[in-house]
Amino acid sequence: MARTSKAERDRAFTAFVEQASPSLLRTAWLLTGDHDAAHELVQGALVKTYAAWHRVRPEDAVAYARRVLVNHRTDVWRKWGRELAVAQAPERVHRDGDGVDDRDHVVRLLTLLPEQQRKVVVLRYYTDLPEQVVADLLGISLGSVKSAASRGLAALRANHQSTSSEGSSR
Image (tube, rainbow, N blue to C red; front, side, top):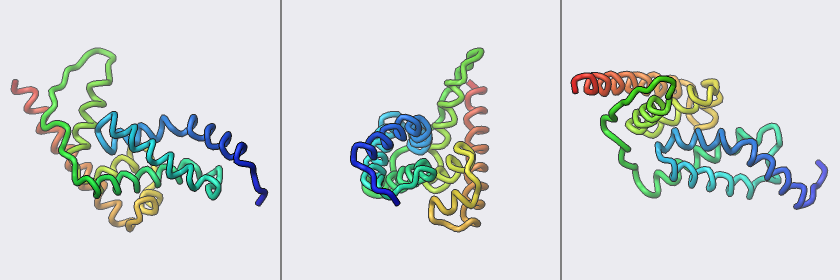
């Protein structure tokens, strides 16, 4: 493997950050349900990724950073304790052509899921990763991914139905 200069590594990392940050930020936002916490999570993950950048293969860089992001999220969650759900029953306002309220509703529903179910649902269905990749990323079995995905989707459906029925009874 050819050795590269620090300047070359820094240029490669800067290009990586520009390319990968939007995707990492969306994933972090779905994992945390909070804009500021998502930015902090991505920054922490990028710092850790930069520290290991000399070992990261370019074709694996996004996967590596995503794994660091998820692991960093777990570390932060363990250190500070489980966060409170952002909202119990969000009110929904529908406007033609405006998906912001739907996205907000999805994020609020995700915050109601247990941590592992939230990670599995986000990685499996939002980032569209195969079950085996999610299992490898989270360090759990394929069966655990399938179980967490099934339970997470069932909980999302149940919570969505209960918030929808509450909203329609007002």
